[in-house]
Length: 328
Image 1: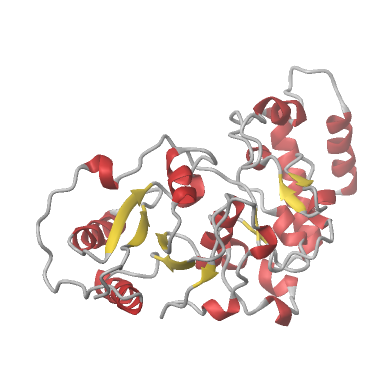
Image 2 (image 1 turned 45 degrees about the vertical axis):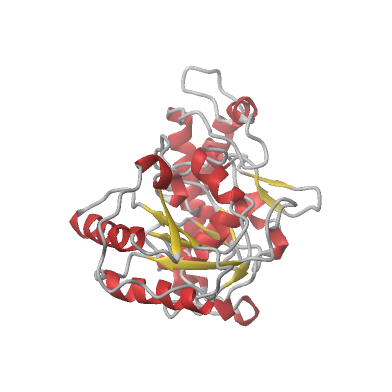
């Protein structure tokens, strides 16, 4: 073991709903990692639901060295959720995921992010047995000059405040942009009716008001010609962030990926449904984008009118969609 070895930070994220299998896997991983001097383990809530400037994201941004994040999402989705919040690095190879097919995320790197360290990303969903995961973490630690994993867990006492980072969360639904694939074609910006997207100072697509997105609506992901937009909790793997090859090899058959309807038609149907739903109810107050923690008032002003308000442009648009047959 290297005398100057710094323990690998392992962020172990919980699932939204801890059923028996998820709970058992999480508990067994935590028990073994607590006893491993090669790592420093931290428990976090579900990664996708974290508040942009909450305790968990603030902790991850403060990590200066190498970082391993294990979450209940596709690794590509983990990467770009982190990048959207200023957390980046070189992609580290694991036995579970071809990191060489991932962009390093430099296109989306804010000034305060760390591009010198390595990130390892693990999707916990396919696993039932913790041993392959522990073996992979041990391999990474040893490659960094650290000690082997103890064969038996040792009961140790760690104060919950030292290892568990809690914050109030609720299920969120917002688009995540893969800037390794984004071509800045503006399809998402022009298509979305809810003010979710904007442009940054370099005229790149920005998820400006993530919580203005309508829960369950993936329409912008369907119209994206380069599959650059993800909704990590969508049931369709292609929308949730499954890797289908490097961006340079994309030749997307959107009908095959997204269902029987052509992507534009299906996206239009979905958009029409959610426009109608938005005109009948107000969403929860937005948390705000990563680069504007006080954007709630602006986001509220961009939301469609409630049913008690006079008719406005949005009502006219709903009528037009009805006439066009998009939301029938």
